[in-house]
Image (tube, rainbow, N blue to C red; front, side, top):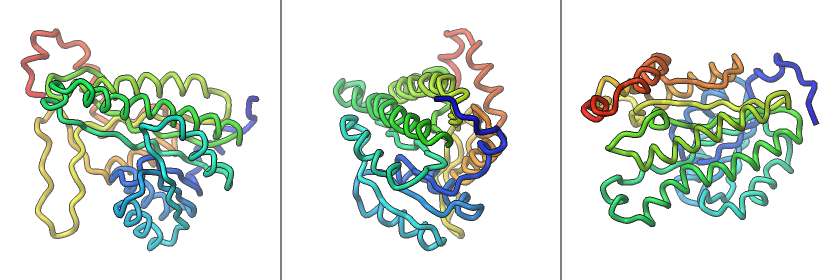
Length: 264
C-alpha cells in the first residue's frame, strides 16, 4: 500500500532508532547526535557482548531509553523474528544498518571460506536484514533506512577487494531498495565514507591520518554530521566528506593500468 505521508514528514529527525551493528563507532556517534536533537528510544542490535552493553549504558547516560537486541548478521533465518520483535514494540523512525567486517585481505585470499564469510557478512547479511526492516517500515507507513556503504564499493582496490566486493553488492542493493521504496513513505539512504579514522578521547594522541590523500579521511563524528544532514534533506546518497563524490566519479574513469599504480 502506498503511503500519503508527505515529504516534510519524512525528513523530520527520528524519535526512535534501531541500530544494526550496535557497537559501530559511526552508528553510535550518529545516535548520540540524534539523542541531543530529539531521539528518545534506541535499540542496539548485535551479538551479546560487554561492548554492546557498554554502548547501551553510554546512551542511557544521555537520557535515552535503550534496549539491546541479540542479532547475528550471519544468521538470516533468525532476522525476521529478532527484528520483528523490535517493530512489534512500536514505530521505528530510523534504522541504521552499520554492521560489517574489514577482513584481512592477505589472509582471506589464502582461505576461501574466510573470504566468503567477509562477503556474506558485508552483503548477504545486510540484504536479509535490510529487506526485513524495509518491509516493517513500509508496513508502518513511514521511516528511513540509512545504510553504511563505502568508497570501496565504487571500484575494487588490490589492497582490499574482498571487502570492496561485499560493499559493492551492498551498495547496489541499497540503490535498488531505494527505488523499490519510492512512494511508500520509506526513505533509503546510502552513506559512503572513505577512510574513517578511529575515535580518540579528548587529550589522547591524534588518530592515524588517512593512508593517502585520495581517501579523504573522516572521523565517526563527521560521518554522523553528514548522516544527520542527509536525513534532514531526504538524500538518497551521502558522501563523507562531500568532495569524495567527485573523487569517486574520477576513479571510475581511470584506465586500469594507471589505476593499479595509484597509491590507494
